[in-house]
Amino acid sequence: MLLRYEVLPTEIPMMTFLAFDPSDGSYITMIHCGWNMYFKMEEKIAGLSVALKRHLRQLFKTLVLQITCPTIFLFSPLVFIIYIPYFELELSFPAGATVTAFNIYPAMDSIIVLMEC
Image (cartoon, rainbow, N blue to C red; front, side):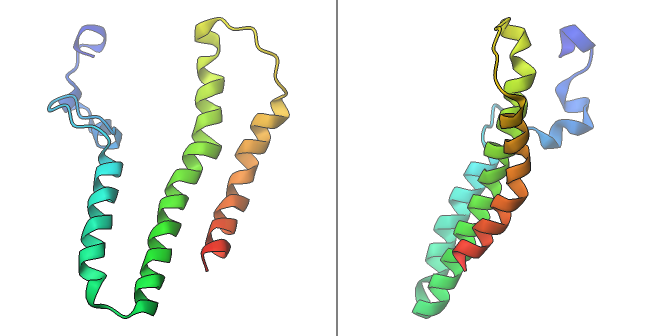
């Protein structure tokens, strides 16, 4: 970034949205926080009732699926469409498949909540 834009990554306010911090090399912030939260949650709910444990685990699974679902149905097709021209691939695929992937997300979000209840 310094060579191309003459700016350091630490000077950019958008730095908070990156999952990679170039200054110390830390990766995968969300996965790390989720992993720690899961194990700390298991320690804290050890003394709770069985019904409450089941409820908290359902809530945790629902949150994980609601984080994963947009990545699969929204961002993956978008990244695929954006990067195809860079590889100079001549692909012919129906645009309806991509539009369907975008449009299925709101329904998937509701289905996740309904299935976990």
